[in-house]
Length: 345
Ligand code: ATP
Image 1 (spheres, rainbow, N blue to C red):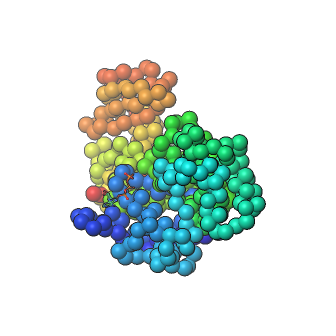
Image 2 (image 1 turned 90 degrees about the vertical axis):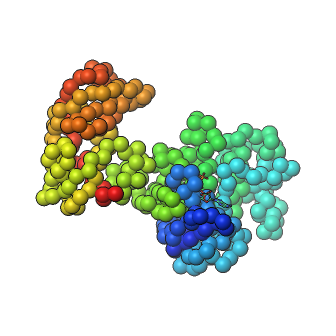
Image 3 (image 1 turned 90 degrees about the horizontal axis):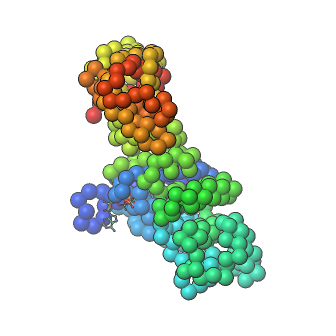
């Protein structure tokens, strides 16, 4: 069991105007699965390469438990990285690919064969060990690459966008496989993704990176319901933002005075409410609203509203939205327990 920690990790590529990773501090608890989440170019892959030792930081340290590993070459770190496009050796069979690292370690052939057979079955590739990579589907190649990493029992496993090349059905299957194997082996794992729904479904904790910095790190629910900043809230699909001032348990804004939940900070801020928490109908903090648009999205319907001159959005089930059309007026409620205050920009 291994805790991975990054301390003030910094990397600027030669010739780049800004740092790709900007003083990153992050701890992944022993046996946990952390999703390293963020938009394209925010520094996720760079962070993984720094942990794996494929590139060197300009400053800062990577530690496993309390021991620094920053000075060690990749093969001595106990860290294995699986890339987005699995780099299986094309001329070797799948079984030989999975056993490759064990052969390099000089293990006896019989033990390698046993470990490989067990691993093939764990990633559901039984019977496919004699095939070459080209004779496997993309999803099967991903599973073979995962097996090749796991068979080495790394202290830390890094998976770079393991699901992005798979179609939606396979993605779900691979997600469950990764989570199942991770729980079974207890290997401290970091999964890179740019998809927030995927991070929420997979991880114990999410580390959200924006522009080379850690924007928030916590359980998925925290990033959804208690975002640390406007940028985090926007990344997680937040759309309702009201600037104003918090004072004595109420928030004063263009919507008038709204009751806040207990414990909110005082002073200027931005009130936010997730669109699925905005209730159609009377209730606490009720206001009259005009419906501007009703957009059917499949499992949900988006209602665009104007409330006291402010644009707000609600997400509701399609059956609740059937009676609504552009131009309708109705009462909406902003339940205090669903309100959250963000710091001003
Ligand atoms: P993506 O999701 O698109 O893979 P990412 O979050 O993994 O993106 P990185 O690949 O870490 O982001 O890139 C971070 C920043 O560093 C980007 O601005 C990128 O253009 C830059 N960068 C990445 N690799 C290099 C390199 N080898 N040389 C110069 N700049 C690089």
